[in-house]
Length: 286
Image 1 (cartoon, helix red, strand yellow):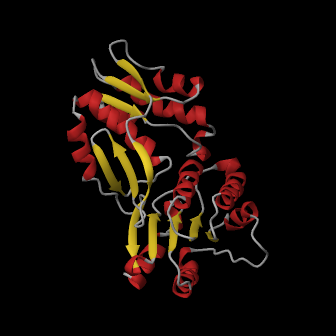
Image 2 (cartoon, one colour):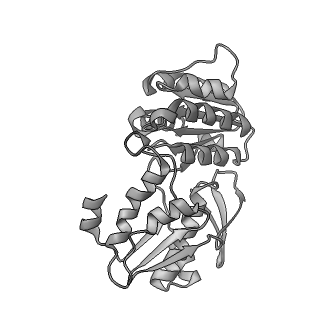
């Protein structure tokens, strides 16, 4: 992080949160926060650091302990944007101070980050609500980042969140999938990488999360696929898949053989390669 901080020397830093990620090299969340906090020491004179509220004091202290004396720290509580529901196309309905938007943004987790960005833009750029509303209305997610598509004349809602995964983002994605107003929900869940000693337990926990969220069917992929099944409590005989290429056929068969409306989430760490599952679904049901 030091090399990046020396290159950037930012005017402002926004800390959205700290979770159990990159633990193979950093071991625990406090160390993750300490590494991220290096950026604080390189903020330019007169700059600002915005920290999301709700973090523990130990994590917050690691983020800001290097702050120079001439830099202001602002604790921000996201409350400007409200999720009012999810529409029939799988888009999140967001109420801003200036109106309503339907956007491809995860209604759990990601919306808090967008809300924090809204506040940061208002503070750092002195931008008014109408202008922020207009700018947010033009938002389009990158591939693999909660990118929602309506396929097969609206019968299938595909949520492409395949770029990466950790326990925080996986949990939020499952909660978001649960909010899509269709009866059948399926999740292609790939391994979450770089979790170190807690990896097995976190995969079991996310399998349990899928069950609690009412996900109808799992397609677990990777070395930890059986741990997802263990947490989900699935019946014996439910398949696990070692690679993304192995799961493509079963997912397409499931989507073809189910006549009702279906929402399917595709999510896993980038190394699992679930992008090919997304591409196959789009090609089959465009």
